[in-house]
Amino acid sequence: MKKTMFALALLLAASPACADLARELERLVGFTIIASKTIAGYQDKNGKLQEGFIGCEFDRVIVFDDNKMLTCAAIGYETAFRPTAIILSDGTKFKMIVGNEIYEMKQ
Image (tube, rainbow, N blue to C red; front, side, top):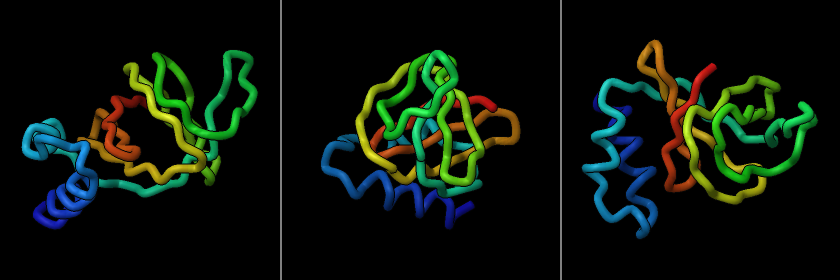
């Protein structure tokens, strides 16, 4: 658990945009890092793969390089091409960290 929290602290502290690291980490209490993946893209409304990452909208399906997917459970915007995503779970819920944003996810 200490290694997980330390890794998250380093990840979030790497950016000056994260003004209150403790507040951000507080949202992750009870979660464990389960994977690090590259985002290949997302499925558009017709189910077609679109390259890049433009954040989350409710029920947007995010597709990873290994063809596994997670679905957005909240809204958040960010633009990146093939970013790394850190996937966390508490056993029932999922979160995904991309850049400086934490996204609520579901399977």
